[in-house]
Image (cartoon, rainbow, N blue to C red):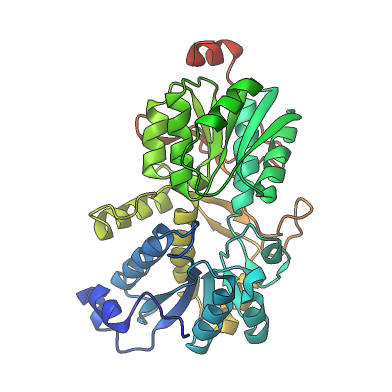
Length: 404
């Protein structure tokens, strides 16, 4: 069965503003977006929404040197074999690169056959880590280490509990790594099966383990919200630590009302006053998403896919001709890929840690949630891998915040 895209030419024409109609008779620059938007417990819609928002903003600003940018979404419906079908169809349609997708699901076969670059793939799968055609700028698993490192340092932790999806060994291993970098070796893992709705037994287990800090990363973000809400309902006061890679607006609201302090590793400098790229993201959301259909605008997956489209456009505008070869060659030689919300990445460098991709963004910003907002505590990025110092809370501050 042929997989159909979620965007049609008619929808594209309707989405283009009057300012870009004049350029719409030129050949579009096509970017393929491979993602599960339906049919799976892990299906998400926000990444596709913000990818289209970024494309609209690019086109409202003249497109790619006068050519309209088209982001064509192919919904895999959570079926691994569909990723290969999506990749093949999008490549046949003339896609310059793929966003999303996963090498392990067959995307690598198309990348190798067409010598294409995968721009911002999923980033947690070892197949992408090993694939020289995958250019990863935000590694989801790295968020686990960033979050645990920062939380342990901030709250002077010696014992920790990490909450994880059942069988998600990648996150568990990197979470342990982050804790170890902060000097915490007593780490207990609490696994939660997919689609869990009753988190009370898991909160009871956390209480019984008596850690200094607890937290984790459940997916999709709705699960993370239920976890935080259950902890509040059960009267947990132990500090919560995580990355904002799985944070939706409802999670931020829940953390703001929770009886425990929190610490977050913020992936992209979520502060429009300090970081112009983040300000641009907020401007686009306000203009193109007035009804707030994007329910997790600061979730790391959502912001990564917006940045994927936005940064692709900035690179493509520099190329004399936008082709598969010109884009791949440009990023493959880039020693200083940077925006103000990412630590500069050298795509030619060796991996800083065994098993991590050469080009992963292993930096984040120290932050927390307060009064319904994510707050950047320090505009200087830190790294769990390089043991960058972070400001710690005193034992008195922890005791005052938790009532212990």
